[in-house]
Length: 158
Image 1 (tube, rainbow, N blue to C red):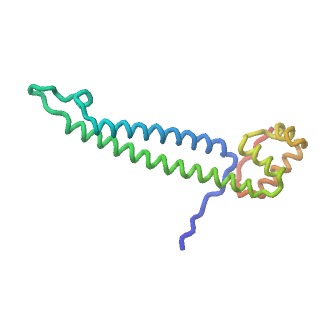
Image 2: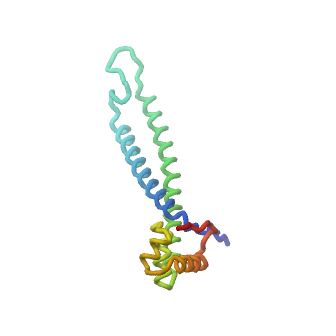
């Protein structure tokens, strides 16, 4: 039986992973638009696209154009497959992080974890938001790190 071992979560990289997922999502959309345009070109080959002669002794460039178009489409499809895989990994990691935080039973700890890891709030801002001293917030973050399946990362200062 094969058991997939996942890397521990590094909550300090949540914002980076989220931004990366959003960038990948846009890149996938743009790539799909480009592929749609190439498919449209393939269906409507014209003299303007191919440089095909309108007569005379010049060589017909349609076969060369079709080969190049198919080659470009294959390369773009490979790139798209890679981006979709990366996007899936990023979304899976974000989901796992959110589920880990949602499993924290103490509401205040859960709120602090969301502010600290997901919103990128610093300790003074969190202390003000939840009406605790900075020292208490540091202690609560330490409790959170014991609960969450966290990869060892440096704690951010104030």
